[in-house]
Amino acid sequence: MSNTSTTLSRKRVSQVTIQRATESPDAQLSATARHMLDVAEPLFAEKGIEQVSLREIVAASGQRNLSAARYHFGSREQLIALLLARRLWFINEDRHARLDALEAAGRAGDVEALVRESLDALASTVRDQPWGADYVRVAAQATFSPRLNPYDIVDPIYLSGHTRIARLLRAALPDLPERTFHDRMRLISNEIVFTL
Image (cartoon, rainbow, N blue to C red; front, side):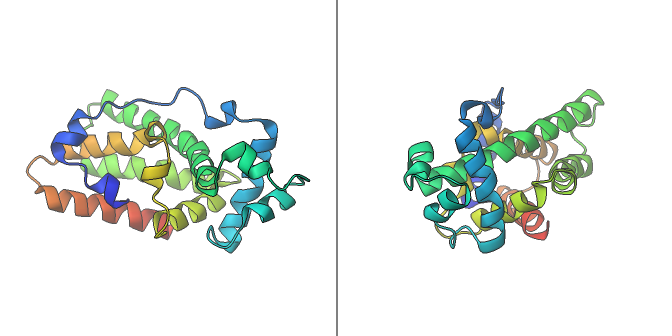
C-alpha cells in the first residue's frame, strides 16, 4: 500500500464515503482502447512498466497510427491507470461481496476473517483469471515504482475495497496505535502484492 493510502487516519478512514463503481472502466472504452490495454498488460508484466514504450504497445496492438495510445489514453500514466482500474474493478466486486457476507454473518469485527477474505479476493483473481498473473506483476511494479503511485493515478472509486477493508479493520482494532495500524496495513498490502 502506498504512503497515500496508509496515511489515512482513523478519523479520515471513518469519514470516507465508500462509493462503488457501478460498471467496469471497460464499458467506457472503445474496442481499440480495450485491445491496446489487453496487449499492454502482458508486455508490462514481462518487460516492466518502465521499459515498454507507448510506441511498442501501439505496434504490438496492430495500430498503424503511432499516436493511437495518446489519442485513447492521453498519457502513459493514464494508460497504466486504466489498466489497473479495469482489474481493480473486478477484484473490488469480489472483495465487496466477501465483505458483505462477513457483515451479514456478524463477523465484521473478525480481523483474521477480514484479512483472509480481502487477500483471497486478490489471490483467487491471480489464480483463476487468465490475466491475473500479469495484472499482479503490473500492480507490484506500479506499487513500488518511484514515478507512479496507483493511489494517485487510479480513480478512488476503483479502490473502494481498500478503503472499506481499512475502515473495517480500524473499527475492529480501535486500541491499536495509529502508526502501528498504518504500518501493518502497508506491510500487508505491499507483501501481498509483491508475493503474489
